[in-house]
Amino acid sequence: MEIKNSMTIFCSVCGCTILLPQHASLLKRQLCLPTSKKNEEGIEEELGSFWWVKNMMHFENIAFSKTVGQKKFLTCAECELGIVGVQLLDEENAFFIAHERVSYDAARARDRQAQLPPSAINPANLAALMANQQGGEKREGAGAEDGDA
Image (cartoon, rainbow, N blue to C red; front, side, top):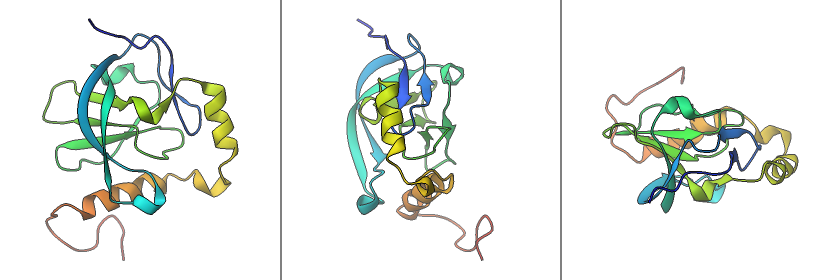
C-alpha cells in the first residue's frame, strides 16, 4: 500500500515549503547523506525513511548541488542550510527527501530560524558541505577550481 504525504513538508530550518501534500510516497530505503553538523563535516549518516518524489516539478522550493559521483544533493532553496535529500542519477525519477530532515510544522520551523544568527543563512553553506563531500572522493584534475586562487 502506497502512503502519500498528507501534510505539507517544510524546511526544518527556515520553514519554507518544500513539498505540498500528495506529491510524494513514503519509502523505506537505506541511503547515506552527508551530515550537516559542524563537528561532523565529511561524515555520512545512514537514513531509512524517505519521501520519494517521482517528478522534480512537484517540488515547491528545492535546490540541487553539483553532481557528486552518481548523486545530486537536495537542499532548501531558501536557506541552503543542510542537505535534506538526494537525487540518484543512475535511477529514473529518483528524488528522495529524508523524513528525519524535514518538518511538518511551519510555525516550529520558523521558530528555529529565529534562533539562528544572521550569518548562518548564507548560500556558501551548501557549497562548503559539497566541497567536504567531494574531498572524500577521488577527483581528476587537481588544481584551482571555480575561482579558487
